[in-house]
Length: 360
Image (cartoon, rainbow, N blue to C red; front, side):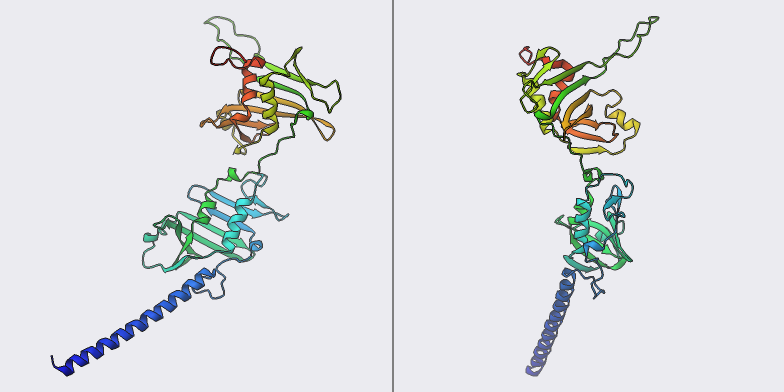
């Protein structure tokens, strides 16, 4: 190769290098513009930023499929969120408002061209979908698979199949919360000892021995064993009470003190079934409850009665199924809040036998 040929080649390579560098600069600028646009909440091809409903107050409807269940929520006439499939359900709307707030301030971590196949992003069969509405505006989202690190998800928006977005897993985590975990749990009355008048605890209906063949069937239904504890205050309503079971003064009984503590601190752990079927109620043990607790107490100068029906122990042993008053809703109460009630329902004020064979 001659000197002139080498110089020509060198010149051409220099020109190619300059053009390549310029191309990289252009691509870098477009990438930054696209990323800034994405991080500002705007979608590609939507310079006005209308890809999201920016004001949380603008939303009036929300519906999503989380991979196992479809949940729908809407604002009622009073401007409160309700569960569409159960308008009377006592909804704690914290999860709904968190989803709305996340949508209204949506940020995209990355914007990608969809390519020819959605399968690589898991968007050929979305793992979850979401539709939010407000007035005439509707926003839709289809979620694909998680990214390699598991902290984000691929997503398509507003039926635009040309663009794929990567967003944080915040929405997906919120959408996985079961509806019963959104239940506003009932607050129990104030069972501080000065408010208590009497406590009655009934046990399960005793089992009836089946007669031998040809024998007579037993008459009637056996009565539930019951223990009634009465508070007596000779020195006035504001004085400490003496507690009696029949004629026995049980004030100093550890079992009674455990019961009074449990009543004072008892609370519902979660909602298990809002409107259970007869079969579900039976599975939870309410065809023959293990115990029935009746508390007579005073509130705001009025005598009142509280009834708690106790069903089976939960499979994981963490608590028991319960129902309040005449309500059919099934809740769970922690085991350590109901132990004294269950002990009295089975063994009376004697308490359960201890390991050394001595009774309480």
